[in-house]
Length: 208
Image (cartoon, rainbow, N blue to C red; front, side, top):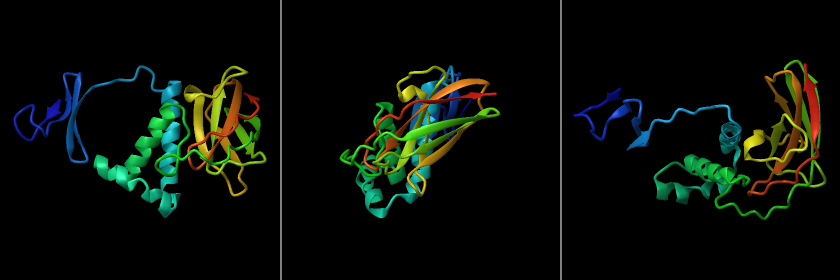
């Protein structure tokens, strides 16, 4: 149902119309869009987008003042907040399977992190993935990829999580809940300026 503050089809309409259109307002700007119901909200692509959004949003406050200030020009041009400029730009990069960046634009000049060593340890409905950095560590985080089959290639559609590096440059991720079965994992480093690290060797574990 569309709620309005003036006659129907006013600029302040809010809500859905006939299950086909949505009227709303974002940051003071009214808009209309098609009502979309995802056929599979747990598809690989959607899980990956949410995983990257979670990583980016949790990292924003920890970004230093210098890199954070680089988002202000873009934010002003688009009449959005620096945070939203940072999220929008990095999610656009991610949808093209490019690594995110702390600053705008992504310089892509940092040394590529060498392949990390990973181990997968199974438990009841969960697997713990332990990550040990290579000779050149990831400067920002680790991207974790999972598949129900072996010998897979990390991609946009099998990315399940990104985590920040720990104090030693390593990382640990608990993948849960999982159905019983065997799962395979790969990990790649995330630099601070938009470079993916080398792909790890594969690790697997069997959930009971």
